[in-house]
Image (cartoon, each protein chain N blue to C red):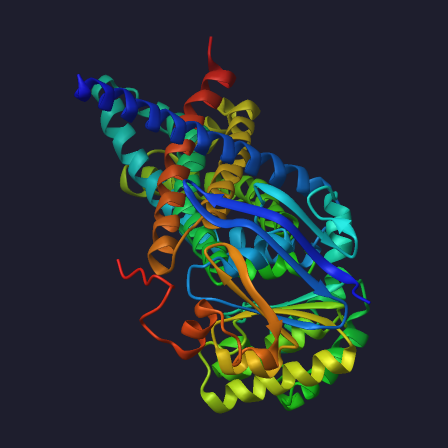
Length: 261
Length: 255
């Protein structure tokens, strides 16, 4: 009899803590997003974060999309050659990169690079009372810390993904025309003819959402981190894990909205 | 005539099923320096954080400048905070900003003072806390703990606040540096005529910077008196605490 009650109690505890997290995240998201639009706006912080999220992530995102575009070309060529459809390589690489791989892999790489760093930075500010100090100096931490980061994430990730698209397609082009002797002119023609603007746009919309998710998870986990070094460490881990999972699930939903029948 | 500038009535604060503050009453009069002493975990820091509005109280009321903090809007709270300075236990300097940017943070961001003027004020405050002005461009990580504490003190007084809170101002400092900080607190508080509320478990420091001392125990103020009365009191809790005896009415929770 007692065991049954214990099960109920565990279910209850789990449910309560789940809803606590959802509620807390909801309030956090609401206040951070609201503060994006309210003055004062800290231009210097926004530019600094844009530089950090955008420019400094270029190497990581560039290399990721370069290698992915190259590997994709190899894979598709081998697969397509089974039914003599080698001419589709250009088109499949372009669609694969632009719609799916560039935003998702770009988002995941930025989650690892930026999300973790944000959680660690804000988490350290939390445990060393710097966030409390901001508040006592009549500065809203949401406006000063969160809003600039969210703005940087939402604006910079689409830009990164656009550059990633170009690099990824170039990588595919390079492999296809040098290693796999596809014709250069036909390859370019196929890419341009069949790629539609909605393919690119859907990828950029995804990127904006992913940028929001990555920075939100970084800020949220940092803001609520507890304890010392260990708490900050687990905040960084949680930021990357939750950011990645949310990116992958949001990817499915956005794809369904754009291209669902 | 007493004129309470900070008034706490019946404050209760719980974390989960742990009661930290239990119907706490406290008054600080204008221009006086009150020090709250008490052991670790008795709710000293929580009291301070509740007054600042960093923690929400469960019941009771907090009045600062005759205004109820709990019922104030965010803008009103920010206006009140502009008249308050706070020295954090771990200094809590912004490590992404250099020394003068740290000191002038409240001036530039809170009071919207021009950067060039704010820098001048910052350097003036730096000399007030006994530091040379050539450290103005260093970052907090390049300073020793005692220097960080003094920079933090300069930041707390930069806006010439009417109330200053000190959270364990001497913790982690050697006895000489602790006394330097005590003297600075005394000089500065007297000089700008501010009201001071400090929390500490350092009895020597408390006796030096306090006009009045209150002892916090189990979420309540159990004794209040002038700093000169501390040694003479017959209160058993206070006696045990100031002499650091292991036997007495205060139960020591070692687990």
